Amino acid sequence: PSPPARLAESLAAAPQPFLVEGGGVGPPSDELRAVFAVFGEMRASGVSPDRAAFNALVHACAREGDVPRAEGAFGEMVAAGIGPDAISYTCLLKACAVAGDHVRAERIWVEMQQRTNHYSTYTPPTPHSYAHLMAVQRRAGNASRTLQLLEELRASGLTPSTVHYSLALRACEQHRELPNSLQRALALYSQMRAQGLRLDSRGLLAATRLCDAHGRPDLSARLRQERSMDLPFGGAGKQRRSGGNS
Image 1 (cartoon, rainbow, N blue to C red):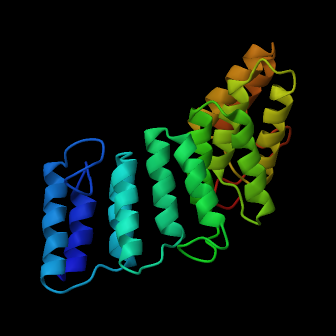
Image 2 (spheres, rainbow, N blue to C red):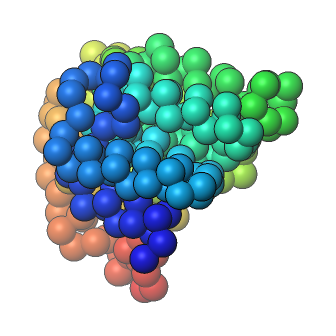
């Protein structure tokens, strides 16, 4: 295969990828050293890496939460005259989510959407972009920001997925002491069911814990039963699974 194809194959086979020899959160793995070699071959043979190749490198760093190397690959791409796209930024956000760096994630989020930034005119977030930022904010304990992002996602015309609702439910559960936390969670649950979505395991655990914390074991049991039967909350009949038909 061509050098770019070999690079993609090497990235896919590397379980612990890092980008560069210097910087990052640790020494590159043996698997990534092979990726370095392929990337070096590309340049030695006069083949210039394209956006897809750089995005693959940024994503490789993101999988390990290596934000410095992810940003290094991103910067190298820009220095090569290649403008980043939504995938590029989303990979950076993923790196921050894995690393738990919500401050840097917000900085990247702002940069991504600045219409006069020095990379491109405007890069609209994707559902994956929202999911990564929601994840890192929830992990940091910023429940309000997590829920705000869900509303921003809807306002942008995008459709929330089970992942987004699960993160929002887990954010509600983080502040179970608030009087309206259960009401907010049940509203989210009803919204996702109206979309034909089904709770994932972590969302179910957060919702049932919240019900129990508010002295509503009856609701907790009902949620478990409805998930096992795949029934809509408060209704009858078979509910569509995500992406499926009734």
